[in-house]
Image 1 (cartoon, helix red, strand yellow):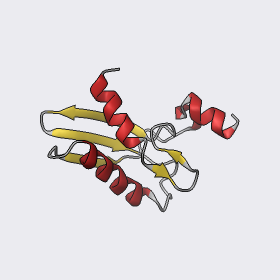
Image 2 (cartoon, helix red, strand yellow):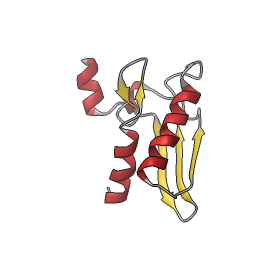
Image 3 (cartoon, one colour):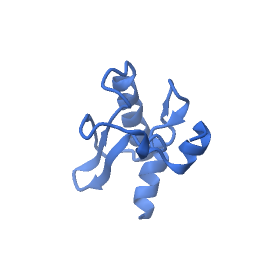
Length: 99
């Protein structure tokens, strides 16, 4: 993993899913995250399409990336395919939830 990727992920670790109290990176909600010539591009999902916090979390993710990379355009997209599954949880999240 490159330093830039780590910096992107560290910015997103500040974004907490309020329903479970865990950051979106460790929850496995980040599907694609890259810094291209056009800016930072993020695709993320929620644990369920019915999640009422989806838009709010997406806005928080965008704000975190803008703060971490000032002057860089940021594009955030909520995606639903493939559907999220618990297998996407990091080892840290698994330990936190006792899985």
